[in-house]
Each structure stands twice: as structure tokens, then as C-alpha cells.
Length: 77
Image (tube, rainbow, N blue to C red; front, side, top):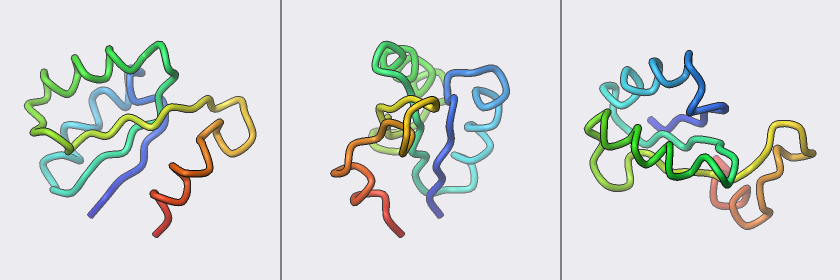
């Protein structure tokens, strides 16, 4: 199973993602460009293997979450 979470570096989701990783699959995490490194650090702390936590650059306040068309296509389904 795959998951898409917003505010992945925020307090609540930061504690939810480890449980999602235990369930298997990949967690796609919406983050601002400046928070990508923070997500990488959290992924290491969670013990996520390469590719299990995928940063999706965007912004909650923008239409379509500010996610590029190419990434939206990749995430479909």
C-alpha cells in the first residue's frame, strides 16, 4: 500500500509516518522545497530504507498543492 501525507515534517504526521512505514509500501510526503532536508533527516531517524519515503515538493496554499504536473501524473492511482 502507498500513502500520501501532507505536512510530513509537522508534529502529528512526524509521529504517524513511522506507523505507515511499518505497514509497508511507500510514503509520499508533501513538503516545501526548504523542508526537503528535514524530511531526509526524519527518514533516517525512522530507519526507512531508500525509496520508502519520497519527497513531493509543493505547498498546501497553492492550487493542486503546488505539485508539478509530472509528479501528479506519477502519483496517479
